Length: 481
Image (cartoon, rainbow, N blue to C red; front, side, top):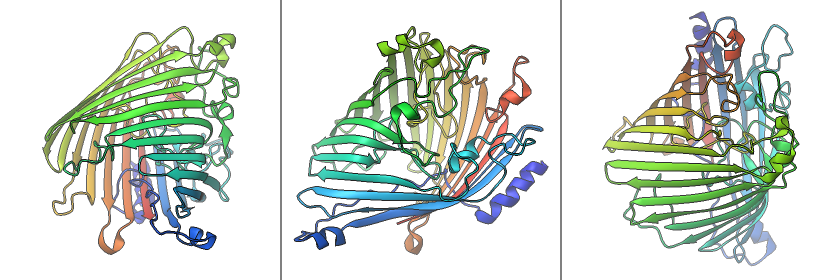
């Protein structure tokens, strides 16, 4: 109880309203219609956007396990030129400072290394407190009514596995080429922005050669990036060591998204990670006035190159294919109150894998601080309730409660439980407040996470550290422009 009170003393001065630990998203770059006649106008009529963010995070672990807190402050600023015959350039920078924190890097032998709090700064340099800057974007782009092309360091945020995941100080951004083809016009009678795309047909193609992961400041080739995070366990004595072992040259992405008769949305994505594996993601969502449902199926198979590596150097097991099925159903009680049920199950003997350095999975059951990467022979269920209590301005305040139950394989069954996660129940409470009027662009965000497990006797006390039996607080102030 004392630990909770101490945490609240730090949290409350920063605000009492909030939303999940992210802004809605960075504002999209606007297409400037001004006709430019010279180089000066080309730059003068460009567009600037960005944000300023203050992020407080704290985790209270069980018993004598170390507790941590951190407050990061920083922001980003981006600029894109005006468009000349569809061509424009863009650049964006981002910076972060450690305003105050506990000892995060384990330099004090009496304090264990922090988990999530390090991700506010740079997990590869956890003792660094300032000058945590990153060149976020630097690209050339072409746009017209139906076609968009980008080349360079870019923010993609498309499909289920290349999301920015802007829930720390720095999101995932990518280096490579990206194209999007949009056909048919938006139906003006449909207003559910979460369901209907701007066009009724999208076709995406891309080749990604580099990434700057969330919680890091450097840019890496994919071969350098994959494995920077904890690699997991091969067996009870051997860790995986696949960092810089794959020899991959890049990630090839092909996908489409289409809406049929305003009710049915279909997606199909294929991700081929050179020399590593292939992932096919199929998804169908149906929506009516009060009711909606969805189905996801994901199939993964190894690249033959994985057979040439030692067992502990393999990212993906070539002997086992991965099959994952997820479904959801939701009901809108009214315009401001929604209930959702979702369930995910593993099929077959393989485990779902996606490099944590590239993004996080986006299953119907995926929630903040809980993803499915590294699991097989598991079942996950989710109950979610969303309520917008302010009738006149429903989008200004959103409350979300989530209960997730994960039935994982035994924590020592490493083949299908790579990160040794026990069964757990997780409760998330989120509040999202978006100011309007004179304070438009200001967002307050709050996320509380409680995870509980009845640990098996074979699981050591320290093994639960940042895995389960914890309380986790996040409070974020965002100013977007």
